[in-house]
Amino acid sequence: MSEEWLDEIKWDEQGLVPAIAQDYQTGRIMMFAWMNREALHLTQQEQRAIYWSRSRQKLWRKGEESGHVQRLHEIRLDCDGDVVLLKIEQLGGIACHTGRESCFYRQLDRSGQWQVTDDVLKDPSQIYSAE
Amino acid sequence: MSEEWLDEIKWDEQGLVPAIAQDYQTGRIMMFAWMNREALHLTQQEQRAIYWSRSRQKLWRKGEESGHVQRLHEIRLDCDGDVVLLKIEQLGGIACHTGRESCFYRQLDRSGQWQVTDDVLKDPSQIYSAE
Image 1: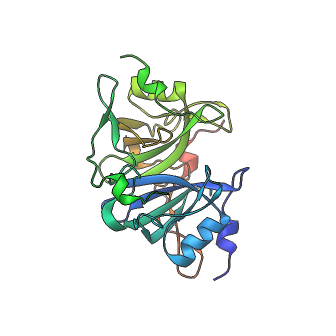
Image 2: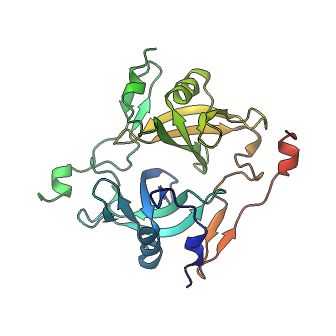
């Protein structure tokens, strides 16, 4: 497979593109992260989500430590070519580092408070080994 | 309603936060855009999506010209407090400026080509008046 499809993406000044990960079956949005060209290329090659960690400035193989790998089902691109959508299968059913299914577990209620709507499925200390 | 909920958001260096708009019924991701504090505040107040246009450097009241307003159903925030998810009802059934339902109308196929998977529902020239 040629790499031409990667050339159609409009990388930002830092060479990154936003990536949305959506459960391929339920449609739930699991998380949001960033990718550079290498991360997206590897995501396609290895058929699992690989992001670029802006805080650590290195590739982030989602699930590498936790086992919560995101198996790739589909890659989509938006009209402007500057946002990527991954449809994924979330192994372990947990995408969030807090131990919840999705990172979007807070909802604004009518009184203007962020309410936590999702339970912690697994204690983060049991997900991540001490480093 | 106080504005404290806005203080919990981690705005980036430009005072912006990424916003994902998702159909509240089908779960389809319709578009991706940016918001500043005022845009998000107005979105909550007016119960419709209002973004910040980075290219035009001004508020962008989605649907203002096209009529394709995004009626707000829910606002969610991610674990890091730096990405917002809107669950919306897409009036007119068209979110994309190309006249398609969703901006994410291209899918990477097995041969490495971006394939258009969605039809144009309405000719953009009929959506937007000449300016």
